Amino acid sequence: MGGDCERRLRTICVDDVMITGLDLLFLEVNSLEESLAFYEGVLGMEVESVNNDSEPPMAKLRGGALRITLAQHLETMLRRGRGVHFFIGVEDVDQFYDDLIRRGADILPPVDEGWGGRFVTLEDPDKYRYFFVTWTNKETE
Image (tube, rainbow, N blue to C red; front, side, top):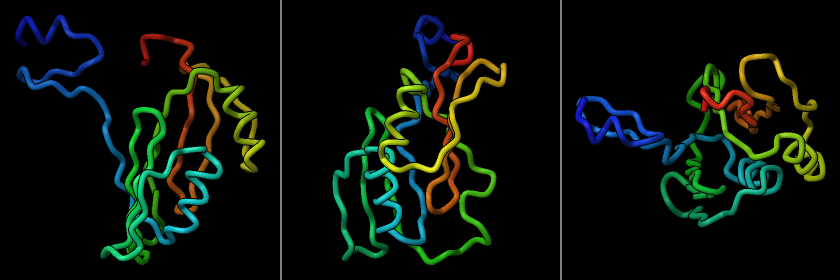
């Protein structure tokens, strides 16, 4: 690896090509309306746009630096979200949990299972699983 690559923090370098992070999640969903209710109403994400007239109907959301695009497709898999888990960092998982409860989320309290993070788990309407984590071991970030 080149010297510049070794000096950069929070990047992954492969043959001097940098991967700087996850920029966008693109998720196929069964119901744009149900998914928007979850991402905006429960998670508190900002809806940037909704286009019900596009093919497929799509919505773009943002939460901090994370961008999510939802595309409504009829269910093409036996179960969406199967085997897919997203780990999203939050500053204070206990406060985030309290916010989720206030927004009506059906969620268990945060846990720490000893692998370096305290977390809560939540599934969206299409069964995509999210782990919202406050890392306790900085090496895992």
